[in-house]
Length: 131
Image (cartoon, rainbow, N blue to C red; front, side):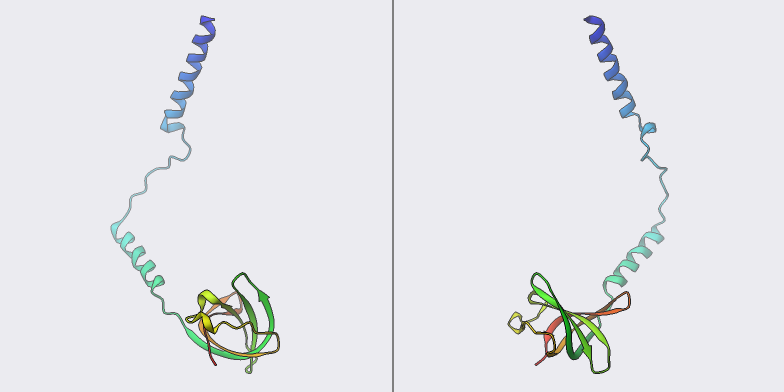
């Protein structure tokens, strides 16, 4: 019995010693010196990206398809200039939620919002429905 307790205690000590040894931890990498100028340059880059101007546009066209979402929908709009935009029309994004209207395929709509690209597609986060 004493032998079993002693062996268990020794095994526990070995496990604890190995677990506490920082040299066995594979995530310990060498410290990389940090240059203060590089840190400030990175911060400036982040600020510039965050303060990038957002382009607001007004588009008008016929709705070709609608993809229903939780609190709105995305309408595929084909303009008179044959440009396709995917306009996300949702209550939370509108400046005035009372403007929200559930359009149907074939109707013409005029919207204002911020534009962005995903792959080659033009997307608009609608902030206003223009009457």
